[in-house]
Length: 203
Image (cartoon, rainbow, N blue to C red; front, side, top):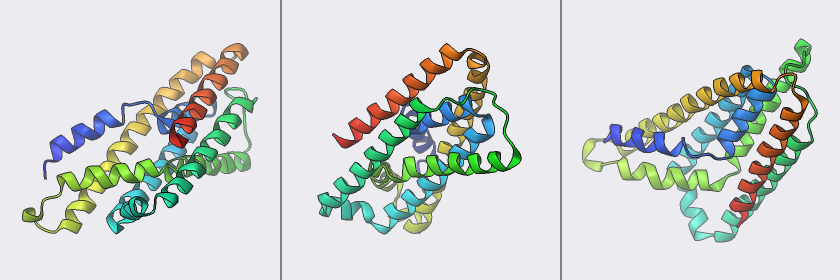
């Protein structure tokens, strides 16, 4: 397996701004780094499911049944619009104190938002289905094992990037803290960009 080339390709892809990156940055900068990490974990689990589904051939089913692909795509776009609107509408200030119970709930909500954002994006599944087979070689042993190892690398590299974005978002939090106007601009910028990605997904 050309693992070095594979990791390099992933490194470039994960640097491209997308809804996953924006969601982690926003969550970490408005709530906390731990909330951003919870979102990153949700994204990682969804990517793992996409790898598994790609291995099972679901992407081929999408190609054979375009209506199914469109259904998932529109659901994903609708969810991103909902997320974007929620980001714009939230009035929670940076650095707000929470009770232990509310923190536990908000960690789960952050995880769920990351999980659904990636899971409902069928292009993520197609990405796995297109990229992974290019680095699998039948002459190098078990195809299933190679696919599994490459999938684990894909999820691991993505998680590493998301952890870095969560830390970056935590640093951004200092700049937004106690500046209501900056927080308002932040909500509108991140929310509008998320909605923009939704429009692109649906088109």
